[in-house]
Length: 433
Ligand code: GLC
Image (cartoon, rainbow, N blue to C red; front, side, top):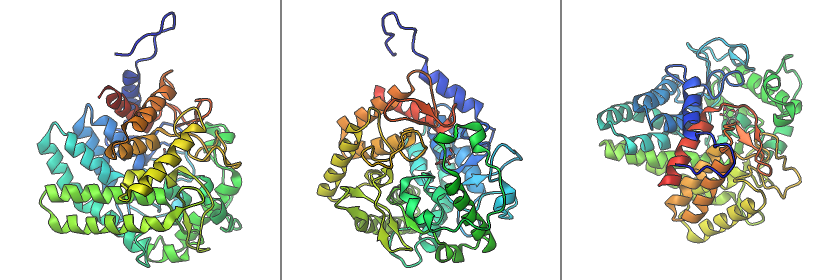
């Protein structure tokens, strides 16, 4: 029960509000991140949203992931958007992607968080029979997605996968991509009209120069017939993101655990191998200058000079070296000291920081959740609690937005947001526990 401050109007019932949002954004077999701005199914949004749904409706939560995985490509890739139905309020839509799938999808992927979410749903399951049935059916599909990543996005076998489009990172316009994106041509992009800036103030969204290049890459991959055997090497944008790799490593660990539990030792071994190799290779992304991990640009063969939240996310993957882990925690504390709310998606001390613009500074509750999980596993309870409290402070007036200004706490981007609602349910539970 939350306390009501003297004289103040009662704070909104956050849990009830979160449920209203999850129900409003529920389209039956999948959820949209929010109506209008994102009217389709998004890959990692769905998985993280399922964590919230499962607190009341376990079957519905499993369906969210099962629906996503139904649209896996024959090569193993799981697309970042499934265009379940026609809706003109979003650009770029199915015609621009032209992937030729039976149900239209985009042609790129997103952070593979499904393995992590499945283990969590499984461990929390009240209905063990249902959990076993779903986990068993999903296991080989999610494993094939992980295998796809390593085969197609790490052709040289380094242990780390690259993204070929900024949207694959889930951190669309991070400062991490600026240099690599600047090398992507912008000529020959078919004329287009953006829809995002008709829903959200343009100051909170990527710039036109970025959008031109996002679309150039889409056109380029389309001209290659969306053949993933060619795309990595043919892309002028190939960046190794410690954030995405951390999520992949953790999901591979969790999938291995599930496989062992369900009596699939060969599948477990392969996932363990991915995770161990990936964790060892993460070391190559450490930056002494920044005191955290940074991206690596495969085209220019150089580390990226940018201290973004993706380089702190290895906390979620588990870092075996205690000295390295302590250094990363120190870095996170420093970042937290530089803004009022947790956690700025880019270092506020960097002149390129922008507290309003999407992934160039704003705080995101889903990122906070991944950090909290990693901290709790490593016994950093105090720091985890600080992030939990700060996340709930951002939403306490009932503003469950897409992201927040880490200095003022103002809600930004889309409103009535599914994964923010799911994270609120998770944080409320963690705060009580
Ligand atoms: C934006 C975010 C991405 C998210 C999508 C839908 O593109 O950057 O991470 O999946 O919106 O919410």
